[in-house]
Image 1: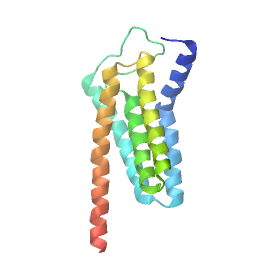
Image 2: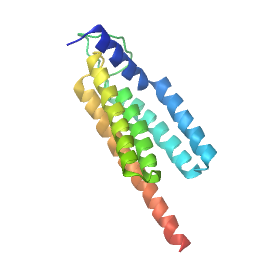
Image 3: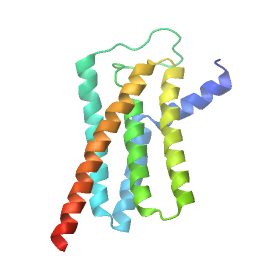
Image 4: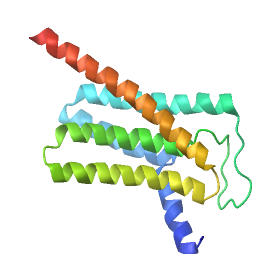
Amino acid sequence: MRTPKLTLIMEGFTNAGAGISVTIIAACLLIILAVIGYRRELYVYAGVIGASSLLNLLLKSLFHRTRPDINRIIDAAGYSFPSGHSMAAFTMYALTVYFLWKHVRYGWLRIIVVSAGSFMIIMIGLSRIYLGVHYPSDVIGGYLISAAWLAASIGGYEHFLAERWKSKK
């Protein structure tokens, strides 16, 4: 099922989930949040993404799972579980979707935001499997760990907002 054209597409998606790409996209979004005055979201965004990266490093050092060594199209260093690309993509794109969802008022635009974020998350994970640098369980594990981290982070953020709202009444 591998073709040169599909390989090129998958390399593009894997690059969109790479550390440098995620850092650049997150930095741009942080600048936008700062410019429009959403300071609270800025701090949450930076903290959640930064902590997700640290969590990935910690888990890789705990599990020490080696990468697949057959049918590898690209080289990748480090341990395999959980997939750093999958965790970074899930955390950044899902958190971006969450904040946009809170501020977008049109249903059709919300559908586009959720669809685009979901598409990027799925394609980045699939690209890692296609390119032979992760097992499917690495990608799924990355997604699940990020989902749990985001649920806790967003839950804490929403609780904080609710408490502040109560104290202002």
